[in-house]
Image (cartoon, rainbow, N blue to C red):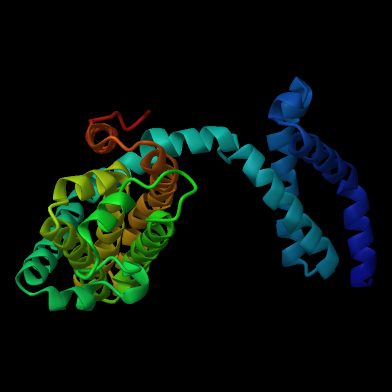
Amino acid sequence: MSVHTDSRRFRAARQEEWRRLENILNTAEKGSVRSLSDEDLLALPILYRGALSSLSVARETSLDLELITYLEGLCARAYFFVYGVRTSAGSRLGAFFARDWPLAIQGLWRETLASLAITLIGVLAGYLLVSNDPAWYASFVSPDLAGGRDFSAATETLRNQLYDSPGADGLSIFAAFLFTHNSQIAILAFALGFAFGLPTLMLLIQNGAMLGAFMALYVSHGLGLEMGGWLIIHGSTEMFAIILAGAAGFRIGWSVVFPGEETRMDAATQAGRTAGMAMAGVVAMLACAGLLEGIGRQIIISDVVRYTIGIMMLTLWLLYFYLPRRLDV
């Protein structure tokens, strides 16, 4: 007797059950499990086990490949409805912001402190070097990024650009350039963490030194307080995002250098889950910083209000990330 004859008989004996299972799955996939009748819900696990049994027999008796492929697909679809966790996209997104992202950030607290310390070292180094010798300014701030904002600029010009009105030139182009630059730094700090964390270290120092150089420039013109207000309204969110991205990069780099009892690949993969979760949220932080920079910084020209918003945003982020929360939220 041929294999094709066996396949036809095997299919004919069980085809009705497979079709019913397929119809139930089609109904559930088009709507939801709630759209199934009680009879279908009770039949679903039974039909699924029957399809698994048929697949096992088909494989053992080497029936035709088309039948085996069909049963594999049918069983895979049924598996997710019988054993899978069925949550909506909204529920998963809510769980991410309510629990998964904050817990991932909490798990990176050591790396976050290290990233913060390295950034502050860079800021201090850039500020001190440029304050003592303005020639260092060009080493930390490229001409494209500076856009004419250097030690040759007049104090009044620098002051006016801190309070440019919406739609005006001034620092608008510079602010967009700076935001793009910081977003790239955040992504690279995370992505290059696998190289033992060294590129992440260098990027954080470089970014901090650039910030310190800018502060030295404006302080030298007596505009340190004003520059601080211009930066903090969006920088408290933007720089925090970069620090968290650096922490995520350090977590991966540390796992590669010190994998423990696991292989380096396994350790990096495990670390990457936490780091990747944190980095997914960092993207949202950068988007928030972009809104603060693009709208709030240009519309709000009061130093007091700028500082208030910046400090408030930093406080909210700290409370959001580090307030204790239940694991089953």
